[in-house]
Image (cartoon, rainbow over all chains, first blue to last red):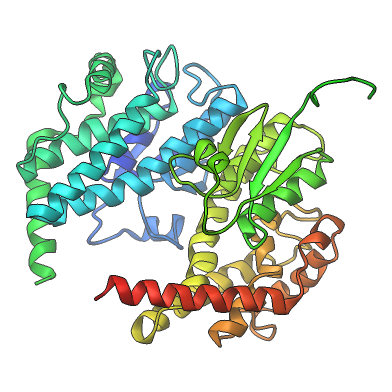
Length: 224
Length: 232
């Protein structure tokens, strides 16, 4: 019986893109369904009734929400190369830890950077810098976060930091994430973007800049 | 076991007596019969051991295996399950594993963190937290339909993850003056709670209610103070 794989996603979401990247790296054929988050489809509500969020992976009718959970599901179900999570349990726990750190702590800080100005924003950028330095430390002595080849944490960092955050900082008119300040991460970026499928999964920049600016404006004026 | 020198497995758990996140790890260690050393962390003065082991978050629990630190209770449990294969905790099927990984942190966020917030927020905020917790409790009740445990016939990862509800939630209810653990609204959770408390490895976690209530009263006062300082 052929596998039926569907992905409900959103073009500007780094969470959605990370699942696409995992599917493409493993060579898994899938149907992509673009969701309009302001008008969620009945299918999305059916497959993710509790959270009603993307991404949701539907594999032979069974739905799996939450991008990090989906990544592990993909790795355990399709065991071909590349193996996404490290085989060693300790290294796996480290990879999971940093992915959670990005999705929770770093995300909160980037929000502070986006919605504050002046001194408050400077402080938030300082905090973000420290967090990124911690992350950069994980790369020391390795070509990729996962080791010798691209893996789970590379997928998470690439989508969040490289594709999403770099556009965000440009839209905000700040420039804190630079090669000078994070030489190891930038060296890694060059390796990652050279991979075919990674480029294909990149959030289209110009469209993304417009999207970010529009959303920032909407949120700022809503809070006035 | 006549060897002189270090215990080959050397497992240490850094924790705090009141933390449900810590206890869920001890239940797994005990279920698997793993020998470990427990180190109690004092609340307000973080030891150098903790700061070395979890420099990023400075939180318990931290598991040390051969000196290597693992943080985040749910990740610690997965690590233990992957390293010591007896009495498996997580299901084997990838879809079931995905569901376990999805629900555990969701309930932590909604019910554990939500009910704790109900201890110190007020007015509209309090109403919001109560609503969130109640909705999540309903989801939990639904998950138990036709099942003995969340894991099915046997105890599983989700029972371990939700186990704190069988012990801590009643104390939170008392201090917050709410009834999250309503046995009429959630008869299946109530039944499960009593079964869970009967499990051998859980017995060491059964504190006298007064001790937990006293702890949460202090937590509530402390958090209210911090909140009012922050909003000045």
